[in-house]
Amino acid sequence: MSADAILARARATSETLEHARAAGKPAAEIAALQHLYTEAVVETVKATRTVLVCPQPIKWHEFWQLIGSPRELFPLMLAGWSTSTDGDKRARFIAQLDHAKRVGLQDAAERFLSNLGTEDWHTTLLGNLDRRWWEDDA
Image 1 (cartoon, one colour):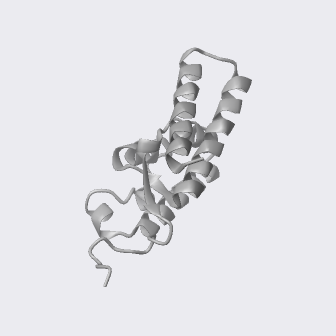
Image 2 (tube, rainbow, N blue to C red):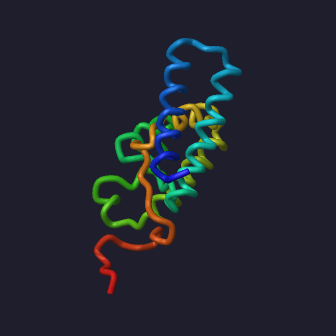
Image 3 (tube, rainbow, N blue to C red):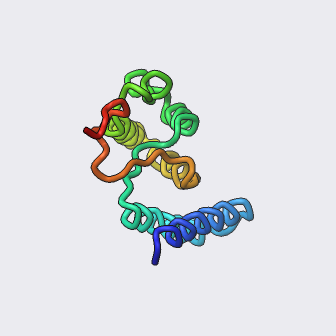
């Protein structure tokens, strides 16, 4: 299956999940769709050799608010976005996930993240996590 087909499957699964939630489908059906969505995202990452870094800035800020707005874990947005590597962003996001788990917000965090579409994620190519945007390829 091509990367485009896999990405289309991930988008379709995300839309199906969103419709099921809106229609008030049973929790078991929604959980099964969440699992399919997670599998589709993993397939997308493998097929395109991309790495999920963090949510896009607006969604990342919403996530940070959801987990209690810990000052030391402010999202790397605005000036922080352009001066940090994707590896820095990913490390901060992982620290936020750990925080959510520690303070009992893991379920809420997972629900929020499973509602994000593929366009809501910042990604990078495998191997570019530590590359700064101003570094040239020379």
